[in-house]
Length: 247
Image (cartoon, rainbow, N blue to C red; front, top):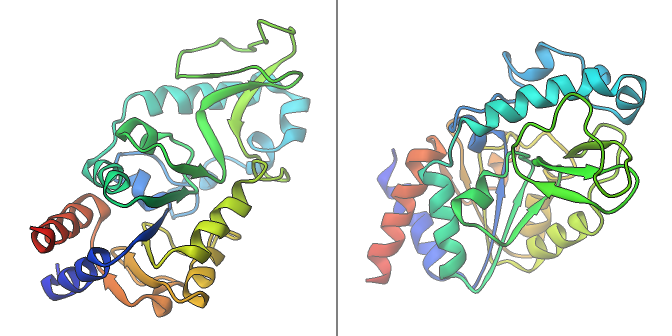
């Protein structure tokens, strides 16, 4: 790890009053969760149009639920890592703090974060297709779960292909990006829109950008500091350097 780069990033954080974090699949991968788009990701094993669209659910809800039941079981086996916990601590340290994530695993919440915008929903949420009922948790609800209040089918609380993002989520994410003075981009390749544009928005409004990623990405050219390492190791190192400056 480049210690000079870590110190430079820590100095940016030490002077920040409004912090926006953007996390992607790399954050989840280090907890052992399968990603979607890499060489061995989920979309190389199944077709999105068969499991991740409203049309697929209408055609065969039991088939779709079989896949999501498996993913929920796998999610129940993993835990947040040290990087997740560091970000939860930062929420307590900076009064104007927003965490924007494309991840659907809910691990930021399990680590203690509360100021989270989940652009693609959550796998540990199940909601009704007919009313406002929803439940948070990873209990197995069966092969074809129905709502206890209105008897309509329940569905996973994720955003499927062809669906709109959760109401207000994108506006809130861009508002956070445009007002922050520092943005930290963690574990994202910068190719999935519209989330990738958050960094452009932050930079255009004068924010410093810190990138945490083992490899260069489509967003690296926008970064003031690039920390080349996994988030589970790099975020705690950055946190330690920030604490030293504050002591």
